Image (cartoon, rainbow, N blue to C red; front, side, top):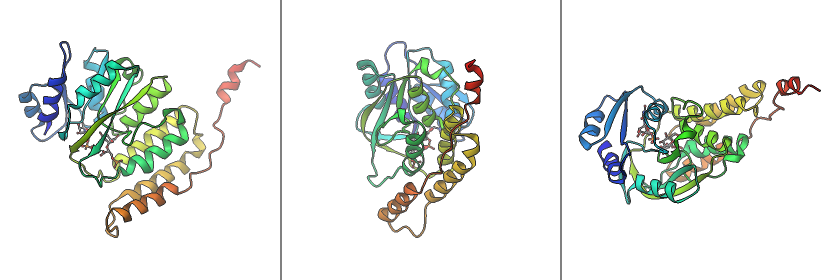
Length: 267
Ligand SMILES: O=c1ccn([C@@H]2O[C@H](COP(=O)(O)OP(=O)(O)O)[C@@H](O)[C@H]2O)c(=O)[nH]1
Ligand SMILES: O=C(O)[C@@H](COP(=O)(O)O)O[C@H]1O[C@H](CO)[C@@H](O)[C@H](O)[C@H]1O
């Protein structure tokens, strides 16, 4: 499967570009297939963000384009569309939105975990399309070096938030219909996304540490609601369950502590 996206990247590449595949602890034939397709392959640790971090340390181009390995079909060349948007506009971060080839696909953790938490704690991120956690995006490389990327699936939430906080301008680029493997990660992906946002909210003084257990509980309950449920009969039942989840009240939030600010104020 990796050969498809490598072929697209090679077709989109310009002189000086590198097409890198980080083989992050895969146990299948990914490395060989990627090499045979024409990519440079570097061995890396398990974890999506860890793989992306390694790639960032290996490039020196102005832009870095991230592409998921499991693209099976697409109407147009995905990296070429991302490059075009990056080169032709004023954005620092191009977020690739796309249609799934299965029209019933519901991005459950995106809309029950990522969207509500980001809207609550980081409203400056704004709306980044229907698939804000997309694995297809281009970022100005200097913005990727400001802080190490988290090792897990919280990496896209981290990018959306940290680039917005740094004043980077995001733009959504439409990639058409993409066919890829879709799997439920047993809640671990949703937990990683939510935990990353809550960690960042605490680190940026937007969530008081004393309130964190209530938010962890809110996250935990949301993740539990995402698991496939035998009682769901079709898409409507699943959606209805997710809507109930989205509407559950968020914990009240106290004022984050600001003692470090007053102690430096000199007043
Ligand atoms: O340890 C990992 C896990 C994932 N990935 C990359 O992250 C993408 C998305 O992961 P996955 O397909 O498991 O998630 P999904 O897109 O189904 O939510 C994969 O295609 C890989 O390119 C990776 O590099 N290392
Ligand atoms: O499978 C998908 O399309 C989503 C997750 O969908 P959900 O909202 O968890 O159902 O995965 C995206 O988000 C991950 C975490 O940010 C990224 O790493 C994937 O590349 C991206 O496809």
